[in-house]
Amino acid sequence: MIAALTVENLACQRGSRRLFENLSFTLQAGQALAVEGANGAGKTSLLRLIAGFLAPAAGVVRLDEVSDPEQRGRLVGWLGHHDALKGSFTAAEQLAFYARFYGGTADIRGALERVGLARQGELACRYLSAGQKRRLALARLLVSHRPLWLLDEPFAALDAAGKALAAQLMHEHCGAGGMVLAATHEPLGLSNASLKL
Amino acid sequence: MTAFLALLARDARLAAREGGGVALALGFFALVATLVPLGVGADLALLARVAGGILWVAAVLAALLSLDRLFQGDYEDGSLDLIALSPLPLEASAFAKICAHWLSTGLPLTLLSPLLALLFNLPPAGTGALFVSLLIGTPAVSAVGAVGAALTVSLRRGGLLLPFIILPLLVPAVIFGAGAVSAALDGLPGGGLVLLAAFSGASLLLAPFVAAAGVRLNLAG
Image (cartoon, rainbow over all chains, first blue to last red):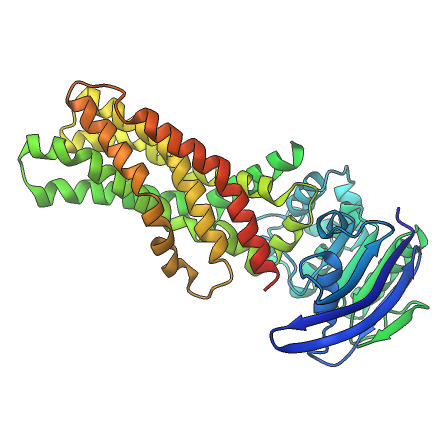
């Protein structure tokens, strides 16, 4: 587990537009932070900067003492706009692949049960609804065993029960010493702080 | 190693399940190899003489059909982000994808080639040289192709641009491969194969690094 995510004087430039600058915050283990802002404010860019996909125009991102983007990325559990699922793979195959690829051992059946997809485990993902796909993407976080979850619109496509489940998973992750940074237009449902871009 | 094998197995399974890439490549290869003898006519000596060059070009073009999807599918559905965040260095991930592409395209094309050589009246020595040259050379096609696929992954019509990037880089493979078949027909078995192996080895060594750089560039775009 890691103790803290530290962002200091971060600036993000996309093309000729400066999305944000002088952004500083610290996220401690066990905390969640909701990143809020209008469309185009730079929420996704902030997450991609922290994951190491984008290079900052200025400033530093550190996970404990790790500032190298590639090493930092290996501590990140990622949930992007897209669910990153293959239509011809079953739900169980998707999770089994990521568990193996990320070097962990995982209880695939347990993860599927946790997100309410126990009966869909052997179903090809092309037959899942948008909400079920999002639940499966959440289950992938469970088998990835990464301390920092970066979630881009985690509630997208989820119904009320799905949103409650996502909030509960985040709560449990923080309870286990993890961290959550979520770009969202909706409250996370946790007693968390928020960051306005 | 587990992560490498996991990605390789996933990509090979994807190639078998989605898009029909293997069947498309084999079908294209067989069609070209069938049409050329019909167009050239019944001059068996001429057919044997041009067999190496034509089958090599056909194999490269057949492999090209599935190369544009090497990274694009993963880019479009967000999987490439997750691959980039894995414990496996992106260079090793690119190498796993190259291996998977070769297993699902280059190897089947190579295995089919002796059958298609019959249509060209290629003698056993030439057929053997064609088989060995494709076995040695098609990994270079997948490796060089991965570079082009990585560079064009975020472009809307990247597949159209791909041949213009890849084909000039594959000229040595075609020359050495076809040359190996000609050399075998001239009674010089092994001619050109060493150069082809060197080209293939260099491609496999360098391509993962260039492809990984291309992927990083596109993920930051």
